[in-house]
Image (cartoon, rainbow, N blue to C red; front, side):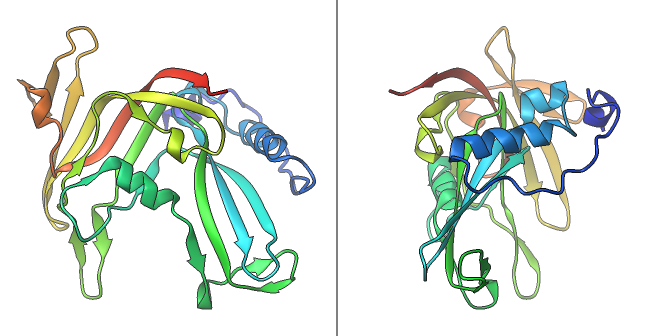
Length: 237
């Protein structure tokens, strides 16, 4: 892809086999994980699209916490069931909600040295300049894959990620494009809604046809992938 073509790393360095020191502070772990990622992948695409997720795994028996940091290019958000419409904030809350890992899903606790019931949660640690949010509309069921046509209400401006961040740093985002999917899991059609950077007007791109649309039509039950651009960045004291 384009990232590989313009990767600043032209000679692949030797793969690091050592784990990140568990005695480091969380901010030091995050910085080291980011540094290690950039050893292999460093391009203008990474500068724009890649953020960092914090994953916290807590043992329910001994209370030991294992914290790791991983890069992300987009976030796949689950859509809450039982209500229609829902908000994008509800999807983000469900994504960052603490999950119980038990039974066959029990991981091995690094402190207990055996599989234990644990809780796992995600928070956003580093925000990308371009935030790509994928709404998980296609969910597998017992006999076939179903599409969720739930309407997700998302803001066109001032999306605040602060409630889902692992630190005091926050970013406000403005929407600039939406990829829409109409149809079913077996047949469908893609269109795009795009914000003109100069006029501020929204346009719908449908194959070769481009037409101006009102902002109220941008939010629909067909919205599938949302593209947000960072507007402001700061730290709350």
